[in-house]
Length: 427
Image (cartoon, rainbow, N blue to C red; front, top):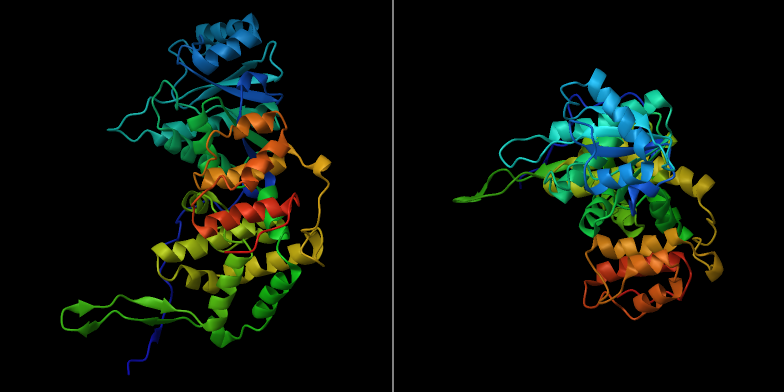
């Protein structure tokens, strides 16, 4: 019988030359997606996607100028007459006063026109980098962005969102709060899908799990032996004439039990992990994870577990570089020192009067992630009106219909966190 070999994991998830220094945005910056009017945002700086001439325009730029008044345009004309006689280059940024806006400054940037035949993504990413550089120079801690180039300049919303969120997450900056403010529903959905659940939503979902399940995970981690961490590979030969088998890793029962436990506990989350792992300083070896929010342990675990589907040996890499143990250690510290109620899993009853907009958003985002919507249910309108009872009544009537049981279970678990009703039995 052929004995499986032990070998090093492939480096398919490596990111040569990835930044490893500076501020890790996942730990130092909060990123939000908001549906609304950017001109109404009470932040230090808002970003205006403008033309090279800097003289304003329609759409979002026009709204900013109408609300901000003539002083913004006066400063822009002065800049055009002095420093930018030939126009502001694409991908660059410059700041002016905010006039009558709630913000203190407006940062103007020129987004590229989308071209199917030319990759201009670096120019689009530069708009975000340069805007945050200017924000740092101004001392701005909170910044609101539109979906640069996703309007009249024709950039597909999903790709614009991917570039925007990935770029912002990768930048070392003193800005502590970034919000993407979108008027259009398609743009809002695209940004929500690319952002995934935020730190608080992930932590709340983890806290909803019974304490005994967490203790079982840590017992599994404590019982790991060096032999359990060995990975053997099978395949790669001709099983019978003209039938080849591919190499694939064989993980120990203990490692498989840990991976299954992570999934059951909600540590494996739904978000754009391929983009996250290309930009996060935490990947690949979890350097700095103990200082990061527990949500980042979930994101890193997701990257390796989901990555195994596309690159055999991804989990082996996490074993060899110490990321898997770092993830388990971060989860343990969260459970022991940060968990709101480790004795009973922190589900309990919640005072309905204390339920917030964010609580409801956490539930509705679950439906958005799976592209599940209730027929005729205006979730955004109900949230804005703080009509929580109507939302919960609609969800209780099973608006997600005949969706897979795993999807239904995710929505159910999100509801259970807020204690508005008894959880249903798992299907």
